[in-house]
Length: 348
Image (cartoon, rainbow, N blue to C red; front, side, top):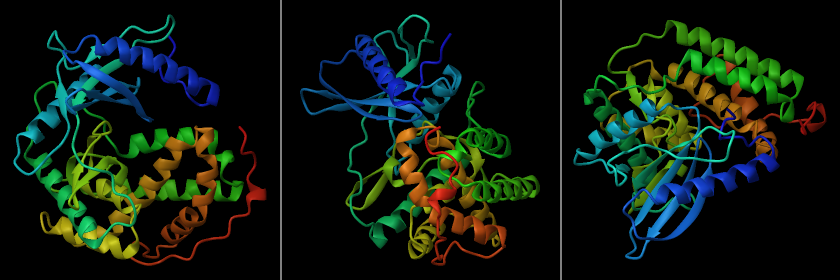
């Protein structure tokens, strides 16, 4: 059977979105919703649609890739259900179909695997536009601290299974990047990426894991996966949630913040949970790891290549500092000059 998610070319992407809309419309027939409008949101690890009802109520329909099993998707919903019982966390919540199922398997075109579909209640709020205020950044740290505290207290059911984000997953991502790096990296830059990957794996091998620094994490909590009400953030899209270091989770958020804002985020986080005394060294390791994984994820999409090339003046500067054992997380780093003529082939 062919994987439902095929979009490494523009033609395959268009074909996938046509299949996805048909699947979404079939899935909607299995929910007791008098919906009026379906709107495509985005294609990433899932394909998402906003479903609007006549009385201004909204839902989120997700079509899942083959990356996660049904058991893993059900476990995500179980985690969110537990979080929703807590007073100070507003997270998405699963909706059952007319037959009481949280996860549906929907028919699609012959030859393709049938994808899993879930429906979620919409989390109210707006995505942040413009520059983040200090208050927003501080509250983002507070929110992540509360999520990690809730994760420490969560008792998984016997059939609970979620991905593990660590050395093995990183190796898999780097193997994928090896197929596509010529689209945005020179041969010399790729050697630096490989050296950084080796250093990351060496550091992961000797990290001490315990219940206070490792557990269930969101694993993708950038501002695109937050909505805000009066500068208070609420997390959405737990599709990548799994097991990993809490500092890895933090690194994913810090990637898009300025050095001064990173201090503010950590200050908010530590108002809820104190970090270990040597956290900066490990946090910088996860910062580079998360950054490289982002490129692994996006490199297969031809539409992303221009932005990936543009980002390399900063990405390669961070990698340079990391390889030189120079602290960089809270400093403004001088970007490197990128010679685009040394990139082997941006059309692969």
